[in-house]
Length: 203
Image (cartoon, rainbow, N blue to C red):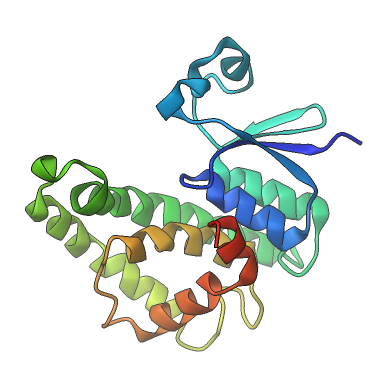
């Protein structure tokens, strides 16, 4: 069986897939690929992913892109405690993954760019603050969902938590005030203190 190949770097969305691979104990090869050095635009990579984006994986004959879809595929294939136990849990894992991508990710990126990633003279504090205000409702939704449980699907950490926490890590990195959301703060702390996450981020 050929080794799983993961294209990307740990400083972008690829971290989500690296984190999951480490949680699952998978044997994989990380092929460093990034838009910064042009390696996402090579003919060889574009043949795998015409979007020129990472992460992308090769698992045998399967080529797959989009980080959250990759993670849902890998837990479906390899099972274990992180995988949904039944159809209902599978649906909830999809729900929370889509929810985070649709309600949190782009807003978190807007904050990150205007607080950290752009050159200082190009940052707009008002844009970052406005984006943070947009997170009030989704953060309240997440906080409510965690009111009576440690993790999104109940008492154990699953791919639903990993996918959402990976996106929420950008919220934390962007210095968003989470003080009004104690359940989110505690849950995110549990998720991001996992050894596999720390290792995926390079310690």
